[in-house]
Amino acid sequence: MIDLRSDTVTKPTKEMRQAAFDAPVGDDVYGEDPSINELERLAAEKLGKEAALYVPSGTQGNQIAVLTHCQPGQEVILEATSHIFVYEGAAISALAGVQPMTIKGERGAMNPRDVAAAIRGENIHFPETGLICLENTHNKAGGAVVPLENMQAIYETAKERGIPVHLDGARLFNAAVASGVDVKEYAACTDTVQFCLSKGLGAPVGSIIAGSATFITRARKWRKRLGGGMRQAGIIAAPGLVALRTMIDRLADDHANARILAEGLGAIAGLRIENQVDTNILLVNTEDAGLNSEEFLARLKDVGVLAVPFGPNTVRFVTHYDVSREQVREVVGIMEELLR
Image (cartoon, rainbow, N blue to C red):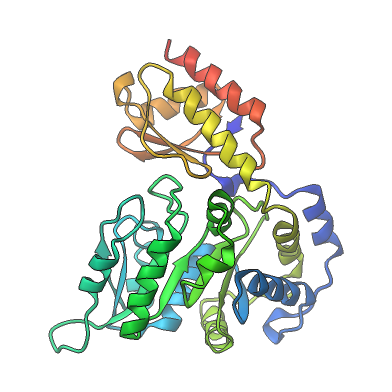
């Protein structure tokens, strides 16, 4: 089975497994796990932030950021198809008691003028804006890289109004590799950043939140409240160190494979590529093949390929470490035969 559902399905490398086996550990709630402490130090250094916090998942990382930045009854500005709004179970409302204010973006990028217009101050009728959330790369926009200039413009507006900015950077290193922009430059346009170790970087578990030392101290308490305080978690954090040290540059291979897949599938009658392929995500429309996404995926599964629905007639494919270039070309051949 060739699994193109997500880069979350990657298996840990041999080096990661060995690192987990050998990891020095301690009680992380007491701050005594040396593997986690080193992972947090390295992550903060790579992002140019003062401090970092290891959390079990990207969703928890985003929620901790909202909970730490905001007060109940405030409003959060975010893109209309952002992961925080679409895929996190309305957690910002259920947990933080904040209201989303969504803005339709272009390839995941909100217009800075629209963001400025959406900011609300003190008024008895309205919630105050407590946070602006960005996403890079943008999942629903097909792994689109949000331009640095866009992030800078929004951040400048936010600073003028005294509003913090959080970046859902689950695939931020994909953006950095694809654009050639140092990850620190993206992080400089934010107050806090969350990124996943368990997607393209290939680690089995975990995400990082980074920001000021004061913010991370407060975030650590929210992690505890949410049940994210772990004990000898260096066993799962050690592979994250391997990921940060060895798996970033190779993301370019995933991007190249996604472009090969797009070129091959785009040449098949009945299929249409919906997105500009910036990174490792490809969106394919199946309507002209006379199949909705669920029907198409069922046929694909029967011939040994897995992907996910992304709309009534849209299927998402994600390239990653565990899918080789040969397998990508094999998928093109399989789909040519399937739709012949």
